[in-house]
Length: 91
Image 1 (spheres, rainbow, N blue to C red):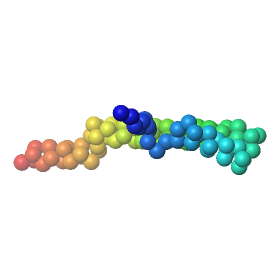
Image 2: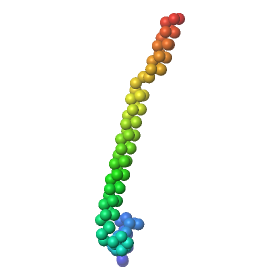
Image 3: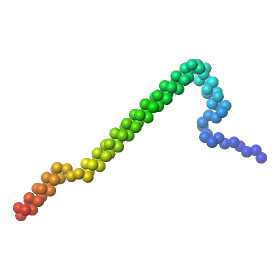
Image 4: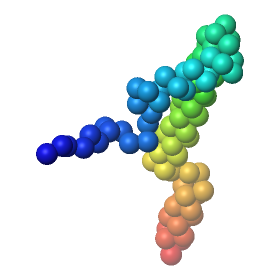
């Protein structure tokens, strides 16, 4: 009985496929440009992460502001309540 080997992550390149991809990268870009390419990719990912964190902070500030507005009464509702009290006192 021979068992079949199933990959842990199907669709991701394994050992031989990874070597072929690296060989193609070296042929296309050259050995000198690959570190520069990796560095610029890392910087782009860092910028994306910082931008995402800024947006998340802004959204949380907006949500916090909405919660505070709901908990404090507005001037229009205070005016309406005072007008209602005056109307009941007049009767």
